[in-house]
Image (cartoon, rainbow, N blue to C red; front, side, top):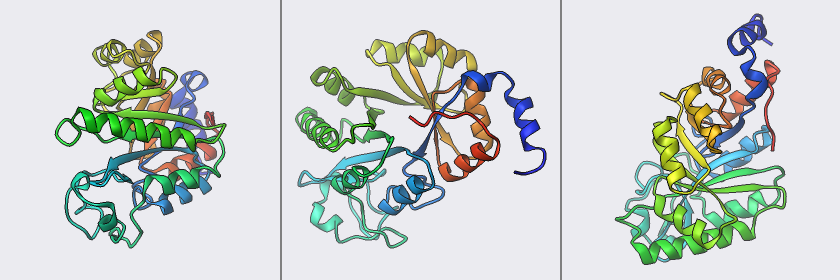
Length: 269
């Protein structure tokens, strides 16, 4: 442990740490520590002790499901084109910029089957341009069925999106499902009221601009709060102080070490 960190932690967190025990989530598997959304990233992060993840799902032109953040292939792979307009056979021939194979949903689900105490947010990368209503419903039905059929008994799987349409549809078809709105805005009364108007009880809001009063208001309304993205260990302090339920960070392994070194309480389930 580095000299002086524990007293500083106590000063910064005070009594707030006693009530706030956020679960740590690896944003895209830990995008600042590993190559994002690759099986290698999920494995390394899980083996380092972080069992919470956020990832992204697209549908290909022939109805397969690929784990990728972008709608286009250029930034992450040696290929070209828009994912939704590209056959899966072509995508399977590609390599990522660091030489990893492109990850497909069934491959990630198969890996997660052997993992314990998982929490995973499956972000549905839908939008009105690429996912008109008929395709949206097909996407939601198939993603939900595949993900839940492969879910370990002790895992918690959450379906999330910036697009309210898949959240509303899944909630209508599967009232037992955990669904969450993602927003590029901080956790404020306005954000929470929108979540409640959609009939949801989870929100992923930006860490920057979120306030303790906003998180408190969310909790008063029965809304769980995930703050994102954590980019440095100092953001861990902020998540505790704000009272967040989850912190979705780009550096999950570093954050887990930091929490351990400073003996901070943390939820593991």
